[in-house]
Image (cartoon, one colour):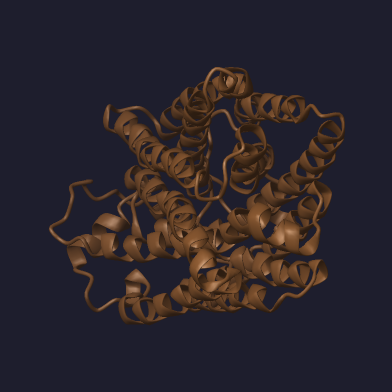
Length: 439
């Protein structure tokens, strides 16, 4: 077995430049997908006469398309490479975002959301593959947390800018301007990105540091096949541990993303300008959770803990931090800010959880299969998102008709609170020591 090089930090830091590009792509990804939720109550719902079920159907179209995109996008990125795969994905989703401005009916929005969903599905497989290619194991959770915090930044920027753009220029321009931002990113991607083995600005010292994990060096020696089929990947318990973890927890983030503005509006009568600050507070908190979550498991590893114990302990801690969200509506009766803060803690814990569960894919699988595994898990998460969107739409319409939408949200937050500890138990049952898969 090849011997690992000493894990000492090299003088070079080009990998962090690459990570910054992934961070901004993820920011744009979440900025584009959140625009519709911020325009729903004040513009789109009155204009197109949407019910909660109509809106949930539009959300479901996005999530179904996202799930279908995940069927092939991981394989596509593994096959053609990160550079072109990421660029193709972001180009298409930027034009899809702009296309929302042309929608003249509910069906038109469904078409735009479907294209957006398929193309946006490429972000996380490409991002996690980039992290696996550019970072050693002990830095991957932190790197994942850092780039994943871009989703929080996008969610902060959106409520601070989208209502203002819609108010001053019209709702169509909110979609157009956010879409154009993604096209600007492409220039920086092609200027700065190349794989580590071909990058002229990457020092040998930093290259050796990136590739210093002994088990991955051994796996590279044992792995000779260029193609890895989904059927092969689905035979491993490690795959199902990751997939079920994503299926149970990704939908909670989707619920926060698409229903939080409406929750604040319906429960506390906040307008879109009123909700900007509370939403910014929630997603600012999640930024700290994302980065802190990635840091914590890396800190445990520096203490000498094995990878599986570090990841598993960190995920348990964050699952426990989510539990108090079941009291969000109850505490919100005292003050809306209690609800905002407790949702912020839960959303922050989700991002910390996410930074670690994403990293388990590269912990358990060789680099050439990482995008495929992320794709399978992302598809499962999107399917879960479809189910929770349908549940939210039907449940909230039912209780709204009874004049008691509070109970609908109470049930939804109860589901949010219990999802992570259940997912943690299943993950540890299937992959207790997160053994490395040899393909």
